Image 1: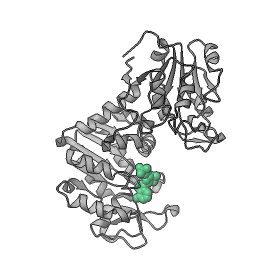
Image 2: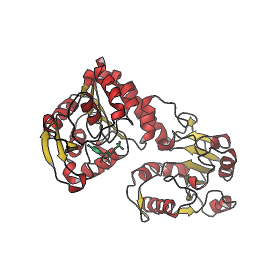
Image 3: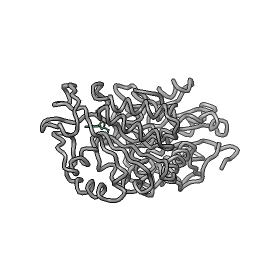
Image 4: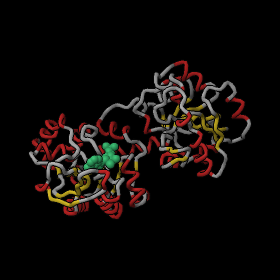
Length: 383
Ligand code: AMP
């Protein structure tokens, strides 16, 4: 739905990005959030962004959004005015100072009313504005004031980025199993268990690498040495593997191992060769070949989580090779955010993937089938 002039627009984005010493380390979410800013400016008097950053206890200088306004100004090549609080009586007047201006308010979580989904806070936040746009898919699983309560006070819409995220994840949920492969990695099986249970019956093949593969391998009775393992989930892993759908799962057969992660020393071994003090930190060459073969026969791929401790060069081989392989394949590729995005930035480029999600936890929860408090609660804004 569009409107001729939206007036003063308040847009809830997910600008929760890594920052160190006042410098934004990864601007992917910021870039996605400002992608259609020109179109929005054309139909509004002013555009004001709001977001949370981290989990502050009260006001924490290191979690101020100021560096984000600097990064936005750089990317847009125009001044993004930072307003260092979010309930200033004066905000309405500040908005008038700049025709078609772009503004950013301070970290929403500096006010505790935000996470309490507080009515009074939502009302005060809304006061200077005419229109609200929810475009923060990565925060849509939170029942917070800037996502939910605020909608009671303004003419509200679901933003284009948010709608695109939902559309892409729906493709994962609706794809036919003939051609669909999911590849999962990352540290913990527990984070992805519900997703596996829900999606396994719908897909053709599930490839598992990263730290989470070791809980499955232990469930099958293999010695995994000192590798990451969630013992309390071994029974769940067994149940999945024992089920008929468990036959679709492919686990690694060779590994990069080390005695201590800090040493960066790598040794390559077969699954049967684990010593008690070996830590599996990467998938090996044969596994990469097997995974690539299966991926190449797919038409749709959903990927979430690195294949090993990819932050360390010596342990990044598997993640690098899988990233490069998917990037070059003639497939429809959807990537779940977080570390997979860092891996793509490191080893390939985001443009080579069909959809890269800005939402980490939110995309997993959506795919698990949970109803997210902020999804599809407002009319779509088409611009
Ligand atoms: P997640 O947030 O669950 O996707 O996990 C990402 C993290 O998993 C990254 O920081 C990786 O270093 C880590 N990771 C991947 N493979 C392993 C492994 N084999 N052992 C320990 N950590 C791992």
